[in-house]
Length: 258
Image 1 (tube, rainbow, N blue to C red):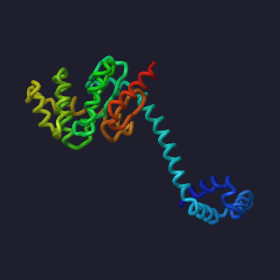
Image 2: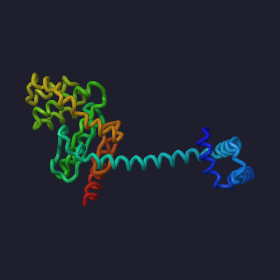
Image 3: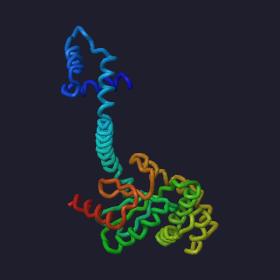
Image 4: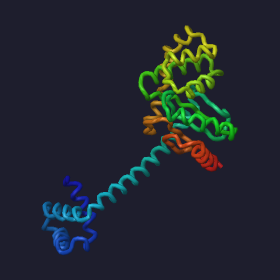
């Protein structure tokens, strides 16, 4: 037990005289005497004895700490979202699905090789179908290894060349059970009419290689470390929460705007 923690805990316990009986009363009297500093060993013994008799207090302290940290994290995330609205909602690197002028935007950080993202794809489709006033921003966030990075680079190159067909490519990649690579993406892109040689050349262009910096920067600031993760309104939602969960968050964001 460190001296700083011992002193802190002792100070907290000093306010509860009934807990320690005579031993505590003696320590308190000692602490109140300016000429007699508190005996460090006595403090440590009393604290240790109390914690051994009441170990549940450690769990209570841990819970209180976690609650405090979660509240602080929520405030910080809201501030990051508020400070990065344009990058979150209007990056030129991101595809927009649904209604481009929708009154609520759902930003999804996704990886083409994320099984949870693929299972969440029907959720997005259901919402687009049932709510024509929702805008989905697809934030490409390849974090599942080299294959993912190469697959996203190929998809990004295709989007720059044939933006009108990107949704078709995206749907194809998100509905296949196979792992996406640059070669599998190129093969799918060629099916959609892309020129293979031009696409391969485009993949290595600076505008593609730098296209994920925005997503990585935002994810780092928001402490996003998994996919899918959503930003809806001023809230970060980690993980796939299903169509009903997304609809609830969209309704909350819409109500906040009103």
